[in-house]
Length: 494
Image (tube, rainbow, N blue to C red; front, side, top):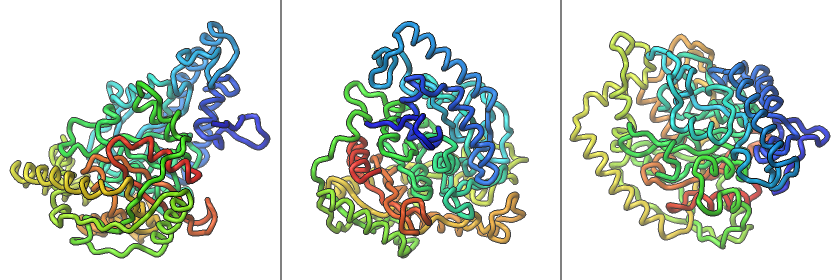
C-alpha cells in the first residue's frame, strides 16, 4: 500500500489517509502529540459549525499522546531507527497496531472519567467509572481519544439531533443532517476532525451516516467484533464497525476491532476479488407499511454503482426478494425493547424526546410474550432472507432512498431550520419514525440477519467527487464476507 509522506508539499496531517498517518506515526515522521494537537485545532475551528463533538477531552488527549511518544522513544532505543512495514526496527510487535492514532467515541460508549450522555437530557450526566469493552480494546491498540461525538437519544434514530447539544451537521452541506446514530463520528471523519472512527450499527447506524457524509461504512457480521456488542440487546442487532474515507482505512480499523489469527483485513484488502454474481434489488421489508419511491439521486447512485461493478467484471442482474410483511412490527418491537427498561427517574421522563418517550411507553406496555413472539419471528425472517440472498454472491441496493435530509426535517424542529435549542419538535413519534424508515429502507434487515454490509459513496449530485451531496450503494454479503466487501470497495477505487 503506497503511503503519502506527511512532508509532501501541501499535505497537512488531516489530509492524510488513516493508513498513511499510521505509517508516519510509526516511523517518527509525525509525533502523536503533533497529530493530536493538529486534530484538536481542527475540532476547535470547525466543530462550532458542525456539532460533531459533544465533549472534547483535550488535556487528557495530549497527556495520552505524550505517553505514546514516550513509548515510541523506548521502542526506538530497543529496535533502532530502521523501518519495515511501518514498524521501527522491523519488529511488528514493538508498537501497538494503532500507535498514537487520534480517535473519538460515540457518546453511547463509556470512557473512564468522561460523561456518557447517551444523547439524553433525562439522564444524570456523571463521568464513567471505567472504560467500556470497545474503548479498552482500542486503547490497547494504541489510540488516543479526543472525546465523545454527537448521537441521537439512546442511538435510536437515523439523525443525530437531541435536546442536550447542537445537531450534528453534514460537512458537505451544513444545512443537512450527517445521519445517525453515528452522525457525529461520520461528520468528524468527513470534515477531517478525525482520521477514522468506530461507529455502532443496530439498524443502519454506521451505514446511514457513512452514506450521508460520503464515507466508506462497514457493518461487520454478528459476533465478528465481540467488544462492540451489548448483552442488553435482545435482538443481537448492534455491532461495531469503521467509518473511514477509504476501504484500506476501514480495513486497518477492522484489524484493531477484530484481530485475526492469520492474514488480517489490511493484508487482503487490495487483493482483487473473484468475479461475482451480484443481485440488484429495490425490495424492502418496509414497503408494505410505508410505501416509498426512491429519489432520482438514489437511483442515479445505484446505476453508477452498477456500472462500476460491471466495469470491474462482475455480473449484476435483477433480483426479486420477498419479505414477510410482519417484519416492521416485529423489528420495531425488538428495536425499542431496551429503551423500555432504561433506568430513568420518573420525574425526568418529561425530558425525553417525543420519539423516545412514545417508544418507551409502548415498550413498557408490551407483554413479555409479545417480545418473545417478535424475536422468534425475526429469527425465521433471518433464515428466510439469508436463503434468498444465498442465490447471489452479494446483494446490491441503494444506501439511502433520499439525499441527506435537512437538519430538523425528521422531527419538524421549529421553523424547520434545525436551530438549537429548538423550542418544539412538531412531528409526532410515528411521523418521525416513518420518515426514517422511508429515508433508509434497506438497513435494518441486515442487522436482523446478522450479515456484513458496506456502503460506498459512488455518486455525487454535483457530478464530481466532493461536489454536491454524496449518494452511495450498499453491498450485503454472506456471513464472513467482511474482507470481500472491503476488497470490492477498494477495487472500485475507494
